[in-house]
Structure formats: C-alpha cells, structure tokens
Image (cartoon, rainbow, N blue to C red):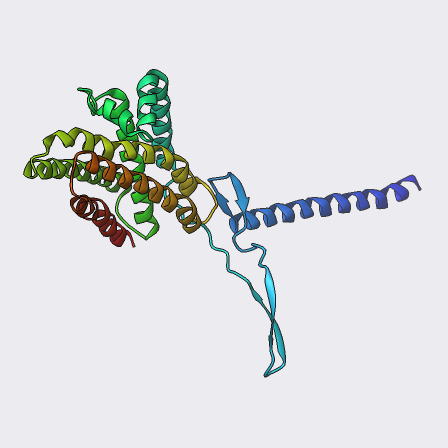
Length: 289
C-alpha cells in the first residue's frame, strides 16, 4: 500500500523535474537566439535590439478613399562604426599633452590666452625669439593638427571611404601639416614682394594663435562625433560649424587690425583673406561634400 502511494508521487515529481529542465533548456535556446539577433553597442557597452526599436507611429487618413492607416514617423538607423578604438587613444594622448602643457607652461599658456583678446599682448609674444618653437606653442600646434586630422578622417570615413586606417590618417596628418607650412611660406613671400617683412612674425603668430584655440575647442566636438549616440549631422551643425565660424571671425578681425596697424591697404587685406583663408576652406569643403 505504501509503495502504491509513493509511486505516483515519484512519477509526478520526475515529470515536474523533466518539464522544468525542458523549460530551462528552451529558455536558454531562446536567449541564445535573441542574442544572435541583437547588435552589441561597444560605445556604451549595452545590448540594443536593432529589430525591436520602438517605432512611434502616426495615424494617416486618406479622405478620398476613407482609409485610415498608421505609418512610422521615422526609421531608426544604426550608427556607423568608424573604428573608434584608436581615435580614443589619439584623443587621450591629445588631452594628456594639453594637461602637460598647461601644468608645466602656465605663464606661457596665460600669455597665449591673453593674446587671443589683446592685440598688444600678441605683439609682446611675437617679439620673442622662440615664438614658434617654444614647447607650449609647439605642443598646442600638434594638438590642433591631430584634432583637425581626426575631424577630416571622420568626414571621409563617414562618407564611405575604403582606405586602410593606418594609411589614411597619417596621410591626412601629413597633408594638414604641409598645408600650413606652405601657407606660412606663401605669406612670407607676399610680405617680401610688398617689402613688409616686419609683419611676418606677427602674421604667422596670429595664424597659429587661433589654430591653438580651435584645436582645444575641437576636443569635445570630436569626442561627441566618435563616441556619442547623437546624430553626426546634429553635432556638426550645432557644435563644429559654429566653433569654426567663431574662430574665423576672431582671426579676420585680428588680420584687419594687424593690417591697419602696419598701414596696409584694406583692399589688400580683403584680397589676402579671400585668397589664403576663405578659398582653401571652400576647396576643402567641396572635397568633403
């Protein structure tokens, strides 16, 4: 009698355990299947389902046919991966270089900061013998060249470029450095032609000065482009383009101040700005677009 009572219970228990094991196995298989259909976002270290994004819908009514339907307001797209690992290393080195420059060249750093807003302060710095090869000036110029190269690299890769990363970025870096070298050389030749060589140090320092400023401001903008989930076009319109315009306005005002101080015709100043400042930007913009 005792065995007859226990036997059904044991069978029920074994059936329950078998069913629970089967359910656990099915749930494990389902989780693996779900994981296979989920894209891993390495930037924010979360799992996001590409297929199951919430689609916000709007009701559309066709009055002629009397048909009401719901259509998605937008179609979400996955942000393109542009090899954000090594740009993170470059940006980290740039920030460390900026911190090192700020810590060990504080007086020079403050002089450069004052030069951006004071014409006479920039004259004092430009009169120094090591105005371009001082470690603070040199470090800030390296920061600007690397950040500008990263920005151009992002535009190119976002447009579908297929060059090797380890070839493209050094090539862009070299082109940016050479372009500013030839720009300063051409400015020196113009000063030689117009017999106004004394303006060359001040002109060169003015060009570099606002490059320093732009290079520092581009650090958060580039970080947003590479590592945030914001749309790239929004960052470019709201951050990058306003920064470039503000820096260019400051630079053009300083060029006019420098030219008038040295009794250069306003027409020549305007022609210079159009030739060596605006025209290269138009060419680069056309190339990127």
